Image 1 (cartoon, rainbow, N blue to C red):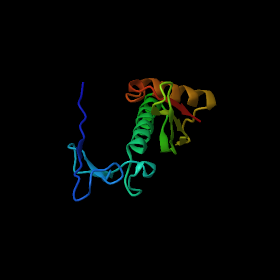
Image 2 (cartoon, one colour):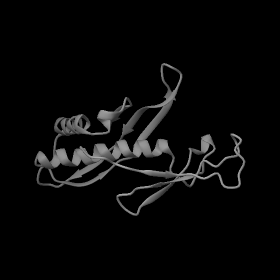
Image 3 (cartoon, helix red, strand yellow):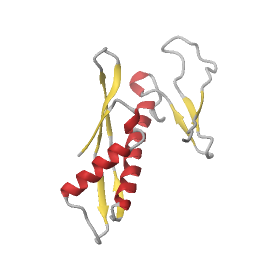
Image 4 (cartoon, rainbow, N blue to C red):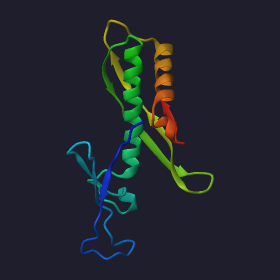
Length: 148
């Protein structure tokens, strides 16, 4: 077992606290290193455009977990991956209870393998399936995760 931590910091400052007044901007700090991210609500929900919003971070985390698990699975299967790029998209929509959720994340990985051993379409699909079933985050959420 392992623990993974993040610290959040928000202050009201001089702004009022009416719904449209208070700032959504805050900071994410990661105790494992000196990195931080400026975060906010999505602009549609009164956040700042120059900050990462939680929905973007969620999509990025799912895509990153899939990629890291895919790389491990590919390596253990004897493939050599030279590059992996993805343009992941999360869809926010109402669930059965009319609550807004990220209902689906679509991954669009473009993977380049070394010339030594390249999977065919069926083998590539198997690698993605295994990565999906082994991904810590995919196993932790209800969101549908698909790849093209």
